[in-house]
Amino acid sequence: MNTPIPIALLDVVGYATSLSEAMVPTIVTPVFRVRGDEGRPLFPPFVIHCGQVCDGTLGTAKEFERFAEDGDITEITPPIPAQANYELWIDADMVPQYDPIDVANETLGKIAAEHINSAELALQRGAVEEADRLAGVALCADDRRLEPLAIRAAIRHRQGREGAVKLMAQLATPPHGERVFDTMMKCYGEMIPTEAPVHSSVYHVSAVKPEEQLGCTETDRAVVLPAREAAAQAQASDGGHDGICCGAAVQLASGQMVTGKNSMPPPPPYSTASSAWPVSQTISTCSRSKFSSPSANSSPSFCAVRKPAWIWRKPSSPSASARPPTQAPKPPCTNSPGSAAVRCISPICRLPATKRGCANSASI
Picture: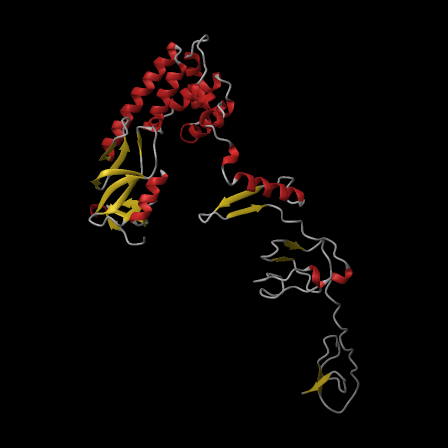
């Protein structure tokens, strides 16, 4: 959509995500609809500037319903009239709130501060899991605060999950600095009593196998086995890249299975024969001509073709037959005295133009 739409003509009919209780309160991106026209939803991404919604995507009612069924959009009923400089956020009870930006930021900031204080008290009591949960709520409410990340990093450090600690440090470092984050994490780590258990139910939930939860297996998905077969075919054909063979499978709506693998064989060695240079099906880019296929004598610096997708480069020491042919010898000068005033046209003639009778001359 290239034409901006005034936000006063829109209603908020949903938000572009699906949240759980562990992900609120938080700010969400609204989904608009042209007021009085239920068939024209306005999907993000878009830019709201000076009371205008720019660069959004106008969809259909069927698309809105499909996105809602897939969980990509959460519908809000009844619709809320859209206003400029307002923010849509979801509170702890999963109820949408639509407030001025300053009011929304202030409210969420207070929620974050309260949960940070509660998380610090929980750490001092040794209630590690409770502190982890409270820090998560504070981070959802205001992701600009450093304290929730530092609290969770201190807990992960006690659990021995250094990978998670590094990830949180990367999230906090750009705006705050590594030294500040490390100091704060160390302080929160010292709050945790030595005898406090650091077991986290969130950490161990991945250890429960899917078949123990739902009675399903990984091969219940139709694309798993075809993808594995494609990877095996790539390995059998000596394909792949740096010893890594991959297979992928996608099932279309019609039920057809489409597979792919990285099994392109390596390019053949350089040869001076013209057949060694693949002929492009669409366009060849060579040093001599932009639209012509190279020949054995053209000695191109490179030749890129669409099929097969190989990049051909000039070898460091090409054979003599691959070099351009030697030019024919230039005609010798046979200037001799004559009766007419002539000018020699031989490029190797060293005699002045006043000489006469040269076989390579033109009359002047």
